[in-house]
Amino acid sequence: MENNTTIVSEGSLDRVDEVFRSLWDDRAPLVIADSNTWKAAGAQVFKTLKESFGDRCSRFIFPDNPKVYADYDNVTTVRQVLEEHPESIAVAVGSGTINDLVKRASFEVGRGYMVVPTACSMDGYTAKGASISRDGFKQTMDCPVPKAMVADPLVFRHAPAAMSASGYGDLAAKVPAGADWLIADRLGIEPIHDEAWHLAQDGLKEVLADARLLVDPGSGYIDRVFLKLVDLGQAMAVYKDTRPASGADHLMSHVWEMEHLFYQGIEPSHGFKVSIGTLVSTALMTEFLKVDIVQGKEKVARFPGLAWKDRLAQVKALLSSTPTPPPVFETTVKTYKVKYLEPPALKARQKIILEKWNDIQGALADQLIPFDTLKGLLGVAGCPTEPGHIGLSGQRLELGIRKALLIRNRYTILDFLYEAGLFEDLVTQVVYGGEYFSI
Ligand SMILES: [Zn+2]
Image 1 (tube, rainbow, N blue to C red):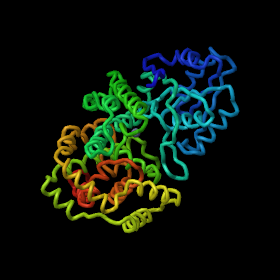
Image 2: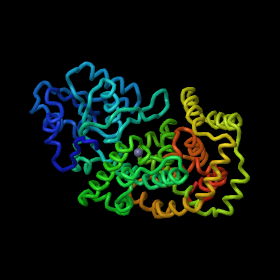
Image 3: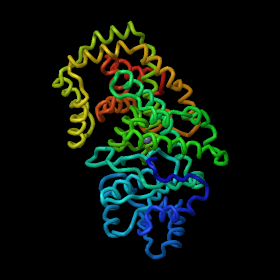
Image 4: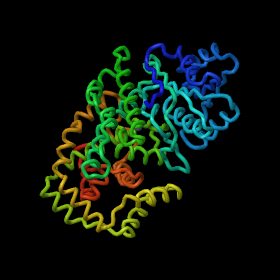
């Protein structure tokens, strides 16, 4: 991780002061947590630091209400706390939200920070960039990785089971995300980066195959899931982009995050939304594998593409079908336009698509976990396996897939199906065909 310190071992929280001193001998620690993560590990971390740094050590704990979100207002709150403590370096104690807020706020005041994770719930601890909502648009805001991560798997074993399941879901996503990258690689759009690829993919399916152990805290399985998620963080740091860890699966999840999807009074976790995205992505790829090159040629021939103004009308209609704040609307259109191909450029792309058709199908067949196996593993891990489990109707699922095509300049199975003239048929088949989901 770019010479940064990563410690993952039982009892490591007792060494937080030592790690802090090795990095910032002349600075004081400022522990930042919320009320839950304070109980999980914050109080222990604060005690260790207090013994070492005395009254120079300070803390900031987000209150219970309202629930803390990774939005820009809260980045501002953390930045103000840091500005009030000009000598301090933040020690983020928490999971995705706290880490992202502290990561970005520390960057804005020109300081490093360290993180103590409280759950094995996602892969972003050691990743570059923070996933923050600003003006309603979820985006990866620039900021460097933490200078150090000190993780104690004992803390994860006491975290709520749903958080560990969420980490499992986020890890499972790397399988179709890898497949997305293979497609982009084969088409010459974004070549595979060897080191990042191996960090992300080596041993991944072996870890995922043991999902049944997730419910047994004594098995040490959660440590394996966490270490693999750490590899993903490193892959993103090496590649300086989230590509190794995020494909269409995450784009769908980002759409539902931006729409503030709630189910039974709570917002499904990142990993739970990603679990459904992972299944949808895998299902779409599975359907693509059924289309042979002869049928592919017919489909491509029937899809000459649309001029941007006509496509824009479709995009506007799609975005207007649900309440979309103007900044989200504008950013989405701007982002999509960058990668959108006008008919002549589309024709050139389709030629490559057909040339690489069999090669891509072979690569995907090797990469993917068969849909039914994947669905079974996610279920055993305690992740949602039906769109309804996170409150998605068929129509909302369909809209999410359609919007996911638009929101990032990242080539995935969605772009591929669109350009190959398969998007409409395959989305309909996956969402409503009854083969993949009970909708
Ligand atoms: Zn993720």
